[in-house]
Amino acid sequence: MQARALARAAWPFAALALAYLLTVWRVVGLPGLRDPSLLYWHDWQDQALYVRSASALAAGNFDPAVHYYPLLYPLLGMPFLQAWPSQPFFLVDLACYLLAFAGFRSVARAFGVPGAGAALLFAATTLAQFGIAKLWIEPWTTTPSAALLWLALGAMAQLWANPRMSVPRRRPGPSRDAPANEALPEPTARATTTSRWPASIIGITLGLIPFARPGDAIIGAIIALSAAAALYRARDGRAAGIAIGSFAIAFALLATLYIAIYGAAPSPYMLYSAQYGFTFAWLGWKAYVVLVNPRGWFGEGMGLLEYAPWLLLGGAGLIAACLATPPARRPVTLTVAAAGVIYGVLMLAYVDLLPTGLWRFNNLHYFKWVLPLFGLFALRFLLDARRRPILLIALAPVLLALTIRLEPIRVGPSEPARMVIFPAPTAAEWIPTYFATAWMADTTGELRNSFDYHQILVSGRVHAVALRRAFSGDERWLGDAHVRALLAGKDDGGFAPLYLTGPWPKPALARYGIATTIGLPHWFGGAPAVPKAE
View 1 (spheres, rainbow, N blue to C red):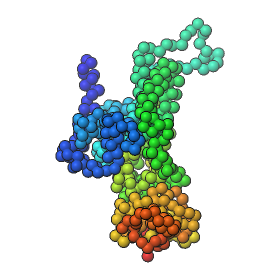
View 2 (view 1 turned 90 degrees about the vertical axis):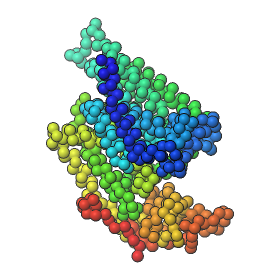
View 3 (view 1 turned 120 degrees about the horizontal axis):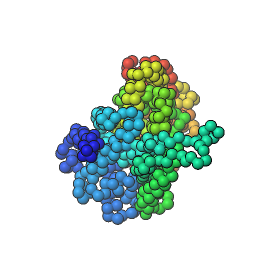
View 4 (view 1 turned 135 degrees about the vertical axis):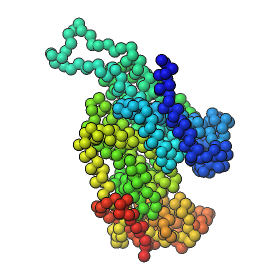
């Protein structure tokens, strides 16, 4: 009997592991698993820094100069450096994928989706589309973070499903007060036991999340608040103590390693990420270029909704869930919805998340954990709308939002502009231009490429797209850091790269603001033309 139950529980993991391995074959190919030089990411900077950090940890080298990214992922890959040098993160990524499903399955159960349906849905939202599947195969720090977030969400869902949650709470009043000699119902041993494992998982995962991706601690805090509410409602002080203790142990272990490397100060990764920051005031425009259509501004790419239109159903499911979720599912549903929405808002407001990076440099991996979340809401929406067609009205705000277009329109020399076009340097190339340590200036002051604006080579011109504030007029491109020093009368001893040859500064050829119009999405009416300076 126990063997049969174990087999029923294990088969979804075995099926997903097989699907994952087949996806590795599809994305990488068997030769790439044996020869690291054949991996298409073998010369990528982030992945090289993961390996460098893992190698340093294996050698006991705590010099901060050899550690950059959060420590959990290199630490997990460290044991496999000798066993599988060409793929030290392969087994880690596979384990994280299955752990993410373990948490997802618990949340799906709370949504009324059985184990088989959860496995199919998880596979469909993680492995079915090539552009999403490779994000789970390539080494990224978001892989362990996704596993931790889903494990924490799953444990939170289990706490709310605990039988102790059904114990009635006393309310004041003569008709509700129990007699003085009548005790409240005591929780059963099963109820006490079932809360301990989720509580310990909550503590461990929330303690590790800051060392996987520090920014995800915000989502961890949302999960922690919901779990605390569940434990308080169940009056389960022992489980709360287990959660706090396991959090303290997990956090202390990784914090000890962190302090040994960086001391009690932010790491270079944290400081560098903080330089980008968030721009919430432009959230609507950012959502448009990331989710709907970036071509008019960035000259290339596609909206995430164009690549994965099923996300529209997920958005409608979020709205329907907030309006018509049964009370039994409400705490888990609202927590999961809050985690997904807040994460999405933060990522869209993050200055460095751009459509160019989303597709050229696979920054879509930032969303890998939240895509199954939207898939779950999409499935729940379809199931609920079948029984209650009135819920289809939740599609209306999603479809109406798609009719809004935010495209470039030419503006005068003194009007605020969101994009200016400069002449491209001789023999300019896309990647060097995009990543150049470049500057431009307007009547307000100087702006840095990547942090305040981003420059993109488009059809023989350079688009400078504002990221933090609008351009105020009289825009001049100052070139890279060395050119800027020369223009300021300072020779820094460097040289101007060939892709940034003069003369400098370069004046703007055209300036563009935002035209807000209403119409069918460009998927039906065709993509807007890329602006061209006359």
